[in-house]
Image (cartoon, rainbow, N blue to C red):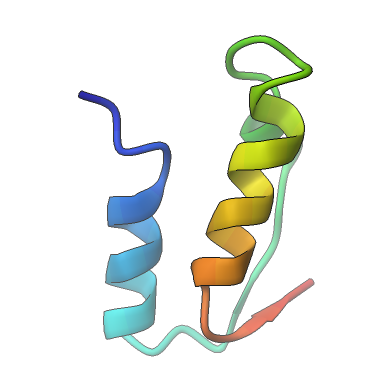
Length: 52
């Protein structure tokens, strides 16, 4: 099962990253209407630091 980025964001939070950026590849997976907006938004809400 895909984690939709949950595992990576959990790891970044655990390592106390200062910030992250969203790149074009983060928006290319799956159907545009489903993935491009809902999943990155969920991960952004999960991330406890700044998003550039």
